[in-house]
Picture: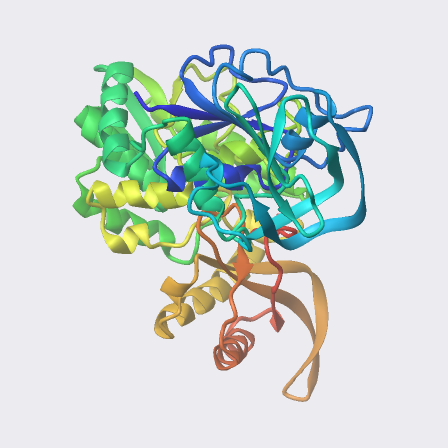
Length: 510
């Protein structure tokens, strides 16, 4: 069994980054809301408290129950967590006299402290808080300071409890990964066993035990997630896996046929189902993005239900759900983090469908999925494919979805993606696509006035999709693509390029 690290989420925008940094150390971790932790924590070897947008001085500040954690396992409190331990355990937290946001440097580090081993003075850290710890809690020992923050880090005597007012999980903290390794490996003694090979062995074994001789139906999309899930399941249950690739009418140009061809050499049992009309009918007149996602999710379930009834004794529905899907779909009903967007493959099945869910990738981030795919021997071309949203082009068409709008966007998207490949830019981009905006713009073509659609192009670089920066594509490339789109795609007379990063924007517009 993996040795786990528990991350308690207080609503910080950086909580997922903590998990990513821990995973990079080949250590498995799980994020749970501070007010809904696991009932059984015996499998965890250490706990990390996240930051939070709340102030510990506020009446509605999160109050975690740490009675089963503090003093019983190593604990690292980050930002809000550090202030919480101070404020409610003999210390004092007050508003900062100066805003403490952005880069800072450690001006003092206490000698011979395990948490700061191999970290030197002047190491850069990232601050993000409006309160500061004026007095340390009972039995606390100061470990580090910056020019503006006296109590940047401390530990509690007599227990393995550590606290820091900066964020080790962000790239701006130059030795953040080292600090996390010091805490988890050197202090908590967590073994670094979370590898692709170990995941494959463990998951295949668990799938065999869970599924047995039962049959599983899996919805393939042609993307990395569902493909890796399919190969994992195929290794576990072989011929009892039945893959269905649905044409929802919202795929990229010619994608239905090309994806089916792609799977021919992978040894998978795949059936193609054209349900374009069903999805477009379900979306007719729907403009709200969340409603569109739900309509698409329901239509997927209905198609799978129809197909599953044609296979005798199917017991499971498999999905390529990954960890960011889960994180972004959990609302404040389960914890303090806000819902960013729901995902069509998260949230369970309707009552009428009796299949049980199996999600072999539910614990993985996107880059981990790719490493597992490589371990399984899946072709580089497939693993290098850009992520594509489950709801397809429906959430790249702002407003209502029609067959004509889909046609326009498919043509624009094909020009953009093919252009990236021709210019050898595709592999330098994590995800790219086009968005059809719900506005018309005045243009001039052949000395005549036009009033046609505007499209936005988007290309981002990322590791796991939790954060992303826009890609600085060459002006010459953008000029060429813009001219080609306007000249060849009827109905479009203006092209713009999205230069927003995540956060604050999301990668998809809906």
